[in-house]
Amino acid sequence: MYTTHKPDFEDLIGTYRFGEQTVSQDTVNKAGKESYIELRKNGTYTICDMPDVFPEHVNSSKKRIKGNVSAKGKWNIESVGNVDNGSNVETHWGIGLTNFNKQYTSIGFLGNKPPYDIIITLGDPDAGEVLIFIREE
Image (cartoon, rainbow, N blue to C red):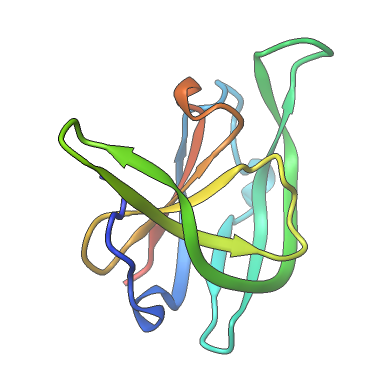
């Protein structure tokens, strides 16, 4: 369930470990690499060894995981889209990241109470291609 009420900044601080992906049948985190997203109290983030996704070839909608990507920068809470539940439209809350690849079009939260998880949507949201990171307790 997408997060549809704006979470408190303090409830988001922590480490989120890679949980699963629906992008490809490729093995993720080869060579024992550990993938995580860390959101810090001072408004900075670190992404370590997140699966890096590429089209299988030019003009292909099929994607492959080819290695890992890491990044550092600043983060903030922002709207990443809307959820239409049939009777009304609600905001889907997530994060904006500086210095990060724009192919990851939406970095949103899952759940409507802490601890939240992170869902990263790749490309068209209707395609269902996501990476999920689980909040460490």
